[in-house]
Length: 271
Length: 327
Image 1 (spheres, each protein chain N blue to C red):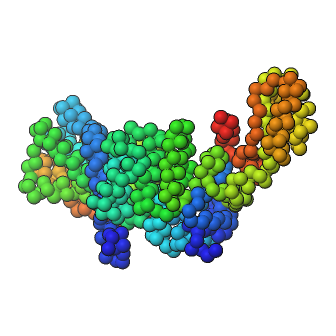
Image 2 (cartoon, rainbow over the protein chains, first blue to last red; image 1 turned 180 degrees about the vertical axis):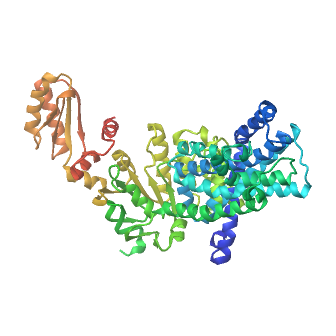
Image 3 (cartoon, chains in turn yellow, red; image 1 turned 90 degrees about the horizontal axis):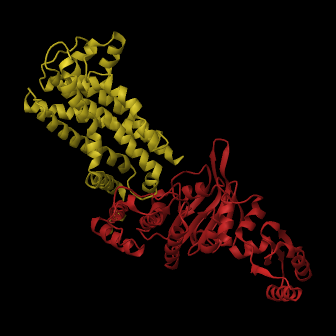
């Protein structure tokens, strides 16, 4: 039996995973062929770490605690938040260059196009986090929490990144070309910054602070601060008091909304 | 003939986008083993038809069978029987040519080992040995299209769709692609080729369907299509435009049709019935009259003229095509 004849439900399941893995391999080959990709992805957070810790850090008064302990977990969360742009960018390129159409004209598992993108982006995000963590350790940041808590913090960070994949896929299919995908930075920037990443929302004007508090990025940032045992003040609002819960819930809500939208957008390519 | 004898069969196919009818009762029957040209201007519906045949979009009405399978109800079976090379070289630019072919081979479910073997075979077949381990970014346009073709041929499909395979390529790239396509055809692949380059259809296709406004308006061999426009013509190019009247007089006596004059380049042409006799007569009489000519030749009508006659307008890249047919 040639493997191509593997049909039926078992066959479909098998190929859904096998094809997904082939797509993940493709994503990983990018890092081998173009190591500079990682540098680009990490450029902004690294520069931000250096700027906020060394340049602005001394001027930053967040009402107690070392600013470094506040900013570095925020930086982790921001890197995850900006990750959706990377997803959107790669999806838009495939669509524009006709690669998506090639996949769709082939007898492969259709789900692999999206699942492969998702898995390789989560792997990519893990590499990003690892690199950022090393840099954070170099500038003197330490986790005060237990090892388990630190691991859980990284899981929560990747959980946010995972949910944002669907926004990335949706936007990547929505925009006409890769140039437009590059312009998504205009959305990503306020999404990442109007949050508790660099400053506590309590120090912002009230209306902006409320938006920042309810930003999913803030919940993840606050939750990982708590898990890392960063001695920093948290606000008194419900959303800030329940950061650990919301860091789990927000990504679920995002997935519930954007996964069907992304799938629908993909299916509509055949209109 | 039964439906099984056709590689591609389309009956009253319809595709609407809002009020616009991209395909409006489109019929086509491509027998196995032929190279079928689908010729038409931009927006005529060529690409829409190919996208329906390759299961990328769904029709609103009518039906289409590819390799005997219905594109709507049996898309997986269709996908196993076809190769598709679209308007863009749909390959990953960051990977190497070999990595591309191996990836597509795995996705065609060949298994890792066979996918690697197949990549090696195709790299050889499409003359990409030297470039195989370079990133596709470094490839020329012609090389990319050859890689794209190779990716389409991984399963050695019986039916290959080529949607404007040489669009945007320089003459050298086009030749590379044409040669690769001819090799595939020699091995028995059925090809449905869309193009707006009339000379491309003329060179590659056994049979041509002309499509305009989503419908087939003519369907025949290139030779028959050309003969519908009229027979052969004699074309004389004068060295000195002052000689034009003398040339016209000679040609009017020999040829059946009224000579047509293009003053700009001193070109006079007229329809003839007995090609060789007419050519000899014109040449001899011109010599007797002492008229010096730049060039004298028999010319068959071009597909461009066929197109103009059938649709009332030129192919989109009309100027381009003319230059190349003249060359």
